[in-house]
Amino acid sequence: MKITRVQTFPLYLSKEDANNSYAGDTAVEHRGYVIRPPWRSLYAPGYETLLVKIETDEGLVGWGEALAPVAPVVAAAIVDNLLTPLIVGEDPRSVRTLWHRMTESMRERGHLTGHQADAMAAVDIALWDLWGHATGLSVSELAGGRFHEVLPTYVSGIRGVDDVERAEKAAELVEGGVRRIKLHLGIDIRSDLATYDAIRAVHPDLDVALDAHWTYQLGEARALGRELDDRRAWFFEAPLAPEDVEGHRDLARSLATPIAIGEAMRSRFEFTDWLTRRAVGLTQPDIGRTGITEGLAIAAVADAFHVQVAPHHSAAFGIAMAAGVHVAASAASLLAFEYQPFTLPVANRLLTTPLEVRADGGFVVPTGPGLGVTVDEDAIKEYVRH
Image (tube, rainbow, N blue to C red; front, side, top):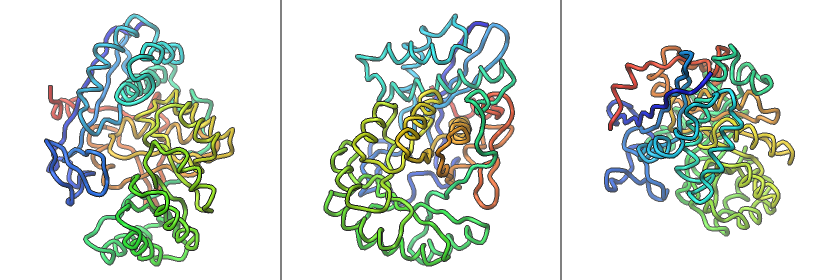
């Protein structure tokens, strides 16, 4: 079996098409994208992503996706111009060999970070999907088996104009069986704690985590973290700037609440550095940025340090979500998988066999070949912008 063709599909859904885009209503326009102060990163006003389709001479097809929430054409250009020549004519079942070839080719070009890594992740996911279709096995079976048929999850993000409305929405989720929630905050210490307390008061058995989106300085993060310790918070995500490994180590040493890190990282080498320094207490690789091959390696490294894995997932669509679900199901040290109710309908829009989430938030692991999802190519063509 040989790879004969690789296609890229940069997708753009407007805010109206997507409904409740990840950027939210408080974002400020910035040259075609938006920023949500005090968060620093750019977001799309709607949804953007990159899909990759790989075909073989035997008629089999595999689909991959990169977490590319801004400028998916950049990762697409890397796939088209740099990665495709490395894999065309090769056996798609040689996933690890092809992954090694791609990563080695990027040593002076970003290597395992940034858009280069995102592009490789999309190709890698497509190769695993193809491998599954060639064998009739699911990705999690190819990875060695599943520890879960239904993933434990947490609901990520509670929206509302104020804490009263957020608490009302949290209560609706709790009524459906949800018992784990992560709040997207990082506003200031007083506001963050007020929102945390409002949500935590909804139910005595509710686990609540706080994502600060990298906004705090060390002293502020320590002060907030000690308040979270008193409240027995579930975890404290992205408290400091993502390049500040030593700051996170100092913070982790001073707190009981686990420090969760990972969405900005893309390789086992980055995670190994953080784990060795004891700067992270919960790892959050995003499979749309790491790919399946590296995602499994990251989970294995975390397990070696006795640190749990809670794969990150935000604005990518159903293909990356399915890939993340399979990696999570294959991880012996899984804590939970991130679930954003606002993104699921958008993720399923491109699938003819939608991903299933139970009322209590549990992700059902697809059992079909490869990723176990079927892509709606007509829907994809509707959102491609060249």
